[in-house]
Length: 299
Image (cartoon, rainbow, N blue to C red; front, side, top):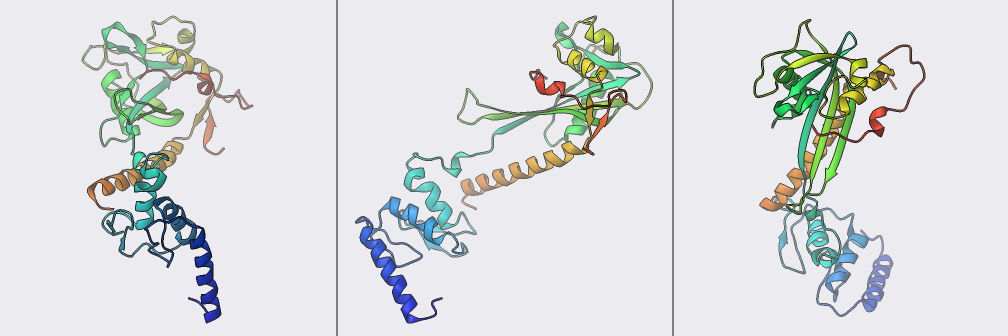
């Protein structure tokens, strides 16, 4: 590692100077001859001077004497950072506190045919609303949107675009962990001509095709303002984003969440603008998206 004895002597002298400025602790660095370190000094020293050391070796932690095996739990540097020093005392955030939040995903559908929007009668006389609902365990967002539209409106649809993706972290009042609300509004078209279902069931009291202008004019009893907002947005020629943006962006989000979840579970177990198109061709100039100015609605 050192090309000459003079070089080695210089390094040893530097270590002696550093050690002379250190406190009178009882800990030694597992990477170099430096000793008499306090816990905080070791906590600062290791990443500052040895962050490039390979982490494929068994190292006994000088603080707690735990054997840090990278193949079984975590490398020594990660162990030292999160379980000792300021992080261990709770003065700084530890990576162990960054557990994945609960994710609740919802898919809604704005389905339009011949200038009319598909709406469903919500149960308990709540009013008309967009077909959609919560994504089931293991289900894809697009599949959930198609399924919910079939269940609530009785129609098969094809998802052709995306209107909005809303990702909102929330603090949970019942626990220290929070939750994330993911809400995607798809644009769709019916696969076949036909009327929505008219017989009520548990999913809804039926469906209806409502003229976009009548929705804007408040001629229908709506559960909330979102159908009216989307009707006006489409009448104004608002952009419909390519459906691939959801596949790409959510794939990255899912991959990161899986990595974080695997890391946490491993630790706990001891193992360590071609993307858009126009809705109305008469609108040639870009306009600010109405969904960016609206408040998120309940699903």
